[in-house]
Image (cartoon, rainbow, N blue to C red; front, side, top):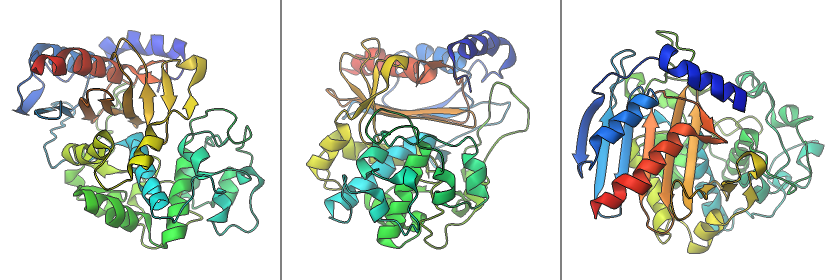
Length: 385
């Protein structure tokens, strides 16, 4: 994944020559509201080499659902396809955390260590609260071996050792480890494995087809993910090694690898999740908790001055994309570049899930997400009126 300006430049230069193409006519189906400018949409799909996607647009009244495909590799999603939505999972994790706050089981400003059976307590977690973890201000960085540590079954105490780079609350540093620890807290408080907890306390309540445990799904229902650059034919990822490990029993000292980016769901189920936040009065969360999630808690700083963060929500203030604040999240993992965003003032919504696309970035925002949000909020959705 290109992570610096130089790498982004090189990546973009190589993209037209080395990445697989989705073909001239990638659109498989359009249901609901017809697109006003389908040719613009196809240009974006081709520009970013999108290898199979589900794109959902909504203005609160009308909805358009578009599926695209690729022949090589063969990606053919449909309404029942489950996408691994990567860091969009953080929205679900934050929502379930806030529901437990509403129920009085958790406190946003309580020390994390008060909920976990740690003995001894790692110095790195001293002073860290749930609010710090939710807003990426815990001072924790991700270890470079995080995935291998998870697969090896290492405990929180082992993994956080040496990973604190600042005092809690000092500055923003994106941390998948921090969001994983939130899952451990929930398991400890509810004494249920994460996949059961998310299903009973979130997914089932909202009527979603979703899971944190990929091994519970038929593999043919999961959208393969292909890294387009460098592209290696036949190296699609359907299920991660961690996703193959069942979550049979609660284990709050070791289950810190699922609540940062392991949710699998369908595009219309993700819409149900987003509506809770867009409407604000669905009954799943208190209006005060929704507002707390949407409140600005941290800034990305000079790397991405248009980006800030709430509790589980990426916030975009970019006049190119919209005249108002845009909220949601993006997800990068193994070659996908997903996005789920809505305009705060209008309630206009875009969901963009795929099986591989350009991983180029504009600052810290995926360039594909920037282009698709501009198209959705500046061009396509306003034309429906």
